[in-house]
Image (cartoon, rainbow, N blue to C red; front, side, top):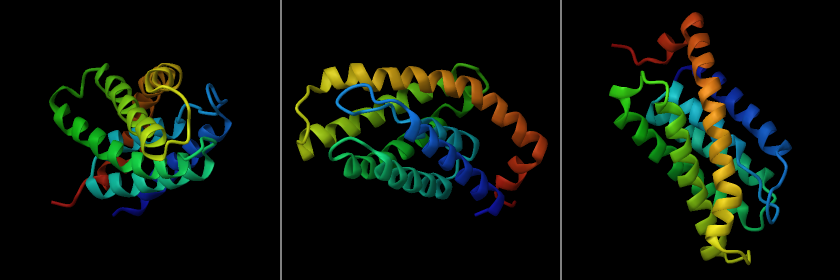
Amino acid sequence: MNIRVLVMLSLFVGIGAVLHAVAPPFFFGMRPDMMLAMMFLGILLFPKPSYVLLLSLATGFISAMTTTVPGGQLANIIDKPFTAFTFFGLVLLTKKISHQKFVQPALAAIGTMISGSIFLGVVLYIIGLMEASFGLMFATVVLPAAAFNVLFVAIMYPIAQKILKRSNLAKAAQPAS
C-alpha cells in the first residue's frame, strides 16, 4: 500500500465524515449518507482491492459512529463493505467505457441505491427498530441521496482526476511492474 494513496483516502473519509455529520435528517432521523460519495470517489480513483477494503471499513465504522438512525450502527458496518465491493465490481465491469462522462455518476447512483437497500433491509427487517415501509424510506431518503451523489461525483471526479494527474499520485497508486 502506498502511503500517499492512504493519505488521500483518509482525506476522503474525513471529508465524508464532515459531510455526513452536517447533512440534515430527512425522514425518521435518517439523512443521506454523504460518506458514500467520498467512498465511491476513492474507489473510482484507486480501484485496488486492498484500498477498497480499507476504505469500506473506515467508512463503515465512521458512519456507524455518526449515524442518528436506531440500529444504524450495525447497518452501516454491514452495508459499507458489501456496497464498496459491489461498486468496485461495477467499476471493473465498466472499465472499457469509463472514458464516457456519464459512467461514474451512473455508478454512483447505482451504488447509492445498493447501499440504501442494504442499510434499510438491515434496519427494517433484521434489527426491526423502525416502523416504516421500505418503499417509503427508499423514496424519501435513498433516492434524494442518489441524486446528490450523482451530482457530486459528476462534479468532483473530473476535478480529482486532474489533480491526481498533476500530482503524480496516480502513478504512485499503480502497482510496480
